[in-house]
Structure formats: C-alpha cells, structure tokens
Length: 253
Ligand code: PEP
Image (cartoon, rainbow, N blue to C red; front, side, top):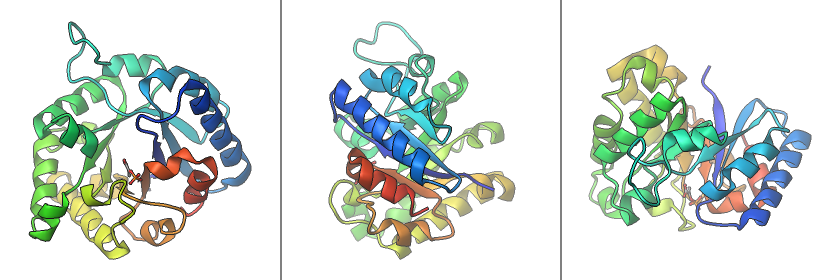
C-alpha cells in the first residue's frame, strides 16, 4: 500500500530559533495526537536542516526534507547546495521543481530532471512538483502541461528510480492564493497522473506511488481533498508555519 504523506514547505520563513521552536511544537503534537500511519515531512530552509533534523529524531513519524538542491554534483557554483550536502545533514527527502523554482528562478523540466537524478543517486527521495498556471487551465491545457512535465522530467527514470519518487500536484493558481483546487479538480488530475505512470511503468508502480495535493490546503479543506482515492496527502505551504494548523491538517488523513 502506498504511503500517506503530509509535508510542510516552510519556504523562506522563520529564523533559526523560530524554526527550531516550530519543529519542536510539531514533533510534540504529532507524538501526542497523531495515531494514523502517516509520514510527516518538514522542509525548513537549508540553514535549519541540521538543527531541525536533530530535533525530529524524537519522533519516528517525522522526517526531514530540503526545499531544493543544486543541479550539479559539486564545484564552482557559488550559493548552491548539492543533493549530497543535504543528505549529509540528515535530509531524507528533497522537494524538486516547485513552481516558485520554475517561475521565479527559471528552472525548466530538463533541470528538474537533472536534480531528480542527482538526488536519487545520492539516496534521497525526491518530491517532484508539477502543476499548471491559471492561463494554462483556463485555456484547457492542464492535462497537456502535466503530461509534458511528467514526460520531460520523470519518465526517463528506471522502474527502480521512479519507485522512490513522491509526486506533488500543485496548481500554480492555488499556491499561496487562498483558492484551492476543488476536490473534483484534484482527483481528476491525480487520477490522470497515476494513469500516466501506469501506462509507462505498470500497475504495481502506479499503485504504490504517493501523489500529494498542494495549493492553499488548510485544516478546513484538507478532509475533502484527502478523501479522494488518488490523493495520498498534501504538500502544505503557508499553513505549515503554524504548528496547530499543520497538525490539524495531518489529522485529516
Ligand atoms: C507550496 O508552496 O508548496 C504550497 C502548497 O503553498 P500554500 O499551501 O501556501 O498554497
């Protein structure tokens, strides 16, 4: 059976003490309140990875992710942080291809594919983000866009490699806007993604791939999003910065 996952993407928020405080609150609440078999992932900024990693050792349910990694192994790339660096400070997962990376920093599918390969080689589990813009949805191109993102960034992977990838469907128009995809819209795209994996890699891999929804998910809408058969949890941005709200979302799984 595939994993249920709720991941918190803190983006460029919290200073180091605030980050440690937030992580410790989440760990305590998860330990006390979360009974279901869910994998909780925290993705703090790079600077907090080691410290947050030390804190979450207290909780077997809580795991560590980086929000990004470099597209090269090592070398003269000032300001970049490599996949092996984030692995070496305790991260198990890495978010790759987030829409903010694609749209603000110009990352394309080829670069996303390189990062996924490097993170897999390093032993990390990539959380691959895909999703269409509002214009693309309004012009009926959403399936086509998701299809190209899958084909160009993921579908060169071997069966063994794809089995280690978590997918996050994050419609760009829903990220940080307060407008979430409806339950129907989310299920429709998640089913499309799972079916594309099935066509390419077969049923056993598609059945065991976790596909998360992201985009203005909160404790009020999480239940109706998560109860869909192809939605295996969420990638949560803004709402992951408040421990109470984040843990309430986790409890909707
Ligand atoms: C995100 O950035 O991955 C995200 C889902 O953000 P938000 O929950 O704030 O829409």
